[in-house]
Amino acid sequence: MPKKAPAGTYIAIGAGVGIPFGLLFGNLALAMAFCVFVGAVIDWLNRKR
Image 1 (cartoon, one colour):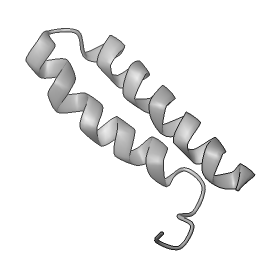
Image 2: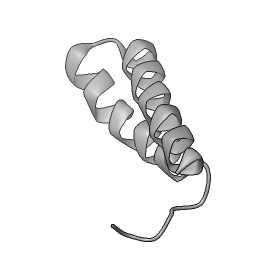
Image 3: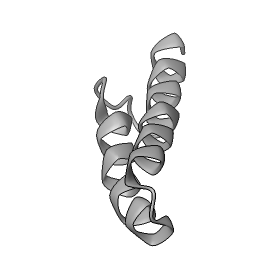
């Protein structure tokens, strides 16, 4: 496993991934919210470990 990423890294990645997905599906806000949520969950799981 790679060393633990700093808090917020996956949220930032999620936001970056959400932009092209949002443009692809025509619903930027929903895609951003979903990807940031997934990033926050991964972030939280990393801190629990």
